[in-house]
Amino acid sequence: MESKCINLETGDYPGPFLTISRQAGCSAKRIAIKLSKILTGYSYMSETKTDVEWKYVDKAMFLGVVNEMIDEVRSGEFEDAKESILFLKEVGRAFSDETIYDISDDKMILTLKGIICRLAHQGRTIIVGRSSGAILKDVPNKLNIRLEAPGDWRIHRIMQIKDMTRSEAADYIIEADNKRDAFIEKIIGRKAENNDFDVIFNYASLEDDQIVDAVINILRNKKIIAPHFEL
Image (cartoon, rainbow, N blue to C red; front, side, top):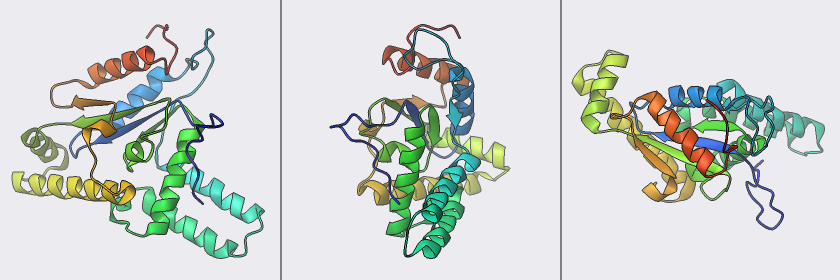
């Protein structure tokens, strides 16, 4: 059930889209939602404005793609249709929340790549986490964003938002980062590197709106969105 993300010979590739990777303690979801609201309503590389929605890929949207794949199995001629549908439902449950990082099954990982590719192919999507930046690294017409911050700053933030002690927050960050790093390594066969991302922001020193403004300017300068529109 994997989808091929790109075909350079035919020019068949997805986009535009954004991916946001983050260290534990950095709020990628807030950035994604703000970006989706600002980008919505402006056409991609067009002289005229059109009502085009940029979507933050939430749990419902992720499961929507899984359900599309299930419908394709039901309407097709698959000998193992029943087993495939049960498998896709299992994938949907696992990959729609943080339990994704506990997955090690190769078939599930292959299916995840297909789902991420489908989400990118929809265009005007903002995909947070799930190793989407690594999966879609070589696809044009996109921006891979990474949010990082110093360890001590992240510990203090986790203490505040999760009401943890310093020791609990430190353990939480280490565990979360290790799970995400290990999952990316399972996806691409190596650890993530800085050059896997187009831009890395220090979340500790920038406000959300400053990051959003910078992203919009980069998208305009790279002509991923129309270069002239008013915010």
